[in-house]
Image (cartoon, rainbow, N blue to C red; front, side, top):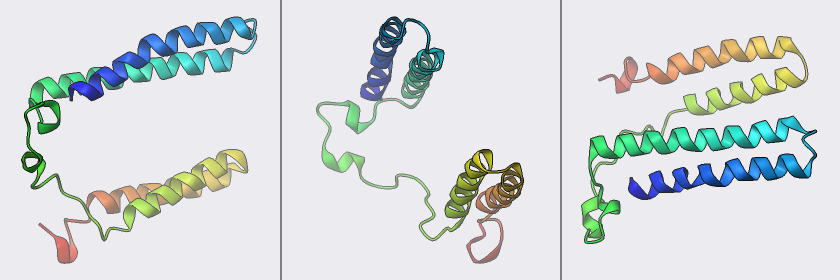
Length: 133
């Protein structure tokens, strides 16, 4: 994860000066943009730190070595649910929540309830039914 770590760490010295330049060009009158760009720099730092910490704990992947072969990255990559409908329901409820912020709070409450149901369904979909473990 060396490449990913460096990529996100290089974002920090980019975004902080960009925020200062943005503040200078707007005569320090547009604080939302300045704070937003600084927060993007902070998020880049947090992601880079996490990837660096995880990379030291996990060790080198085939993508991190120059002498690695293609077949070293083959095999099981994780557990995925290609037939699951819960991510779609959760995404739609998140979209409804943002719509509720713009249109009316009552939509937000309905979407929050739907999101809770979708999250519980997604977490526990392998605990019951045909795919129980």
